[in-house]
Image 1 (cartoon, one colour):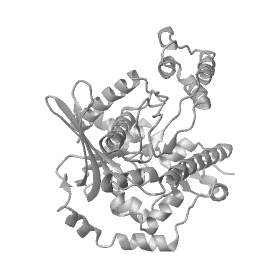
Image 2 (cartoon, rainbow, N blue to C red):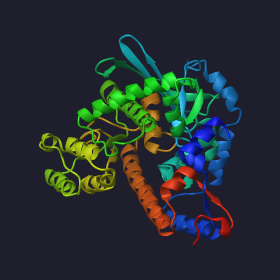
Image 3 (cartoon, helix red, strand yellow):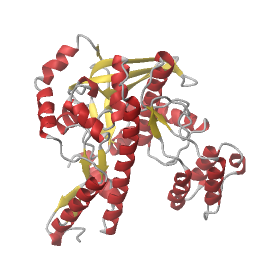
Image 4 (cartoon, one colour):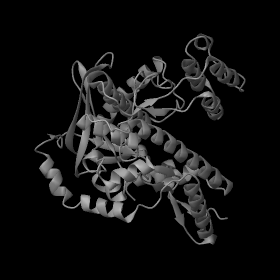
Length: 435
């Protein structure tokens, strides 16, 4: 093993522990459960042959096509960029670059340019509309796009030229507000693909490659996180590691930049993400339930203020065993977020007046459509129907995921372990788990 592998194994990380070992009988039971859920929620698993053929044809001579695109795109291949994803990620749709200057930060979020390959007149687009989302079950993924695209030419793999949609944000050094936003087509070449664990190591090791870049990105993200929290954004998972915080905050900033540009600079419809707020009575119900938990209290100075801040304060000061209970109390009263063709109402949990998705076009239809609108300034005629469908299919996928995890737990499997480590089918006598 490499030194990195040794360190991961010693730390007991997912990368070091290896896959969860299951028997053939349990593997078959899981497959049967997936089929049952796919049928119940009308989730597609296999791609139609015509869609697969179109995808294969679309990536023919793609290396030359990327080189030809350099004439019409910004060439950012010399800009240091990297991806950070879970160890078992199959596609990499976002990369970061960051610079610090005397009076500003420049944050680049490079997003896979899926709309270059998948357009409204294609079979792949029609299939994406049918699916609306990639569905991630522990140890099993059913993609929104054919794997020929999702896992190859659209994925920002390291040391390969890739087409991207770059969101370049110039941020005021003090307020971290947008001084300038530029969204454009680019060609990038990612320097490295990091797992979250590797990112943590890079932050700690001053001699490691990309240490300075990751440190700068995290310091900026940490400031954005604290600012967002102070502004009243709900943070239900306050103890995320630095790597997750870095990616989450940079993606939130990019999504916000794009949808503000669409609304205020262009005044166009798009697939905005709207999250209604609970009623005062519902918030009171949640806060009362939280206060009654053992070892949990809501600081007096926070209680009479914004309830989101009160929950944040309770989460930060509560014992670890209470985190799930606090989260459940809030989620019980929280309405579902949905896609709409205008941002009216804003996103309550994030406390953003305008918000939408842009950073995951490989796995979300909303992002793919927003890429198309940003590039062409053309809004699909059936945008309202697309918003409704994407909202419904997201709910279906999340419900299927919840029921699948529940089934795994009934079989003695830890969904979190399977998610992080994957599974390997072995003879029953060697298995960690059997039916």
